[in-house]
Length: 159
Ligand code: PNS
Image (cartoon, rainbow, N blue to C red; front, side):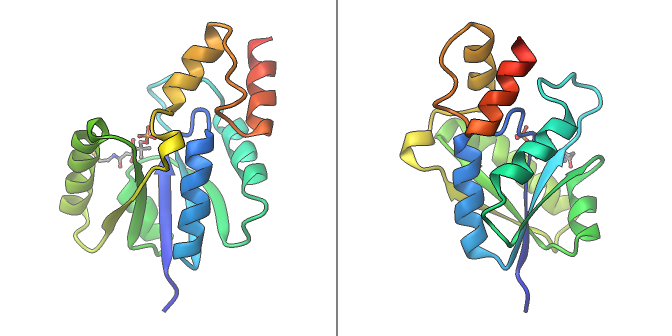
């Protein structure tokens, strides 16, 4: 049996924490799709095209990882991709309530799809895309929080 999973998120921008979950997830599944959820009601920091290109570049060393974007429901995307597993990262207890609600909503919509979690590595337990966006906008050193290609893209975006 081929084990296929989806790691969904906004990835706006992708962080070192995301990459850590992707690298660890790639060891657990035969095929891992990084799914960039497109929210057309929210103006993104980086465009979907930028996020697609950046994540593809950052995952180029992982042959079983594919990067795609999706709109609409995550469970529909998972079914289209023949995936019955959703992978999410959990940082702190504060993530739990949100993740719990989303996982239950997804299970109610699609009982055959399971959500599974990886605990974030300690060094990334505080790291969120929102932190990177704020540090970047306020002129701080965001380079330590994101892969190099992402840092370059953010610099261009803010120039
Ligand atoms: O990184 P994020 O912002 O926590 O990712 C959120 C994402 C993209 C995984 C979530 O918003 C999502 O699944 N969006 C698609 C719409 C959907 O299926 N929502 C869940 C049902 S409530």
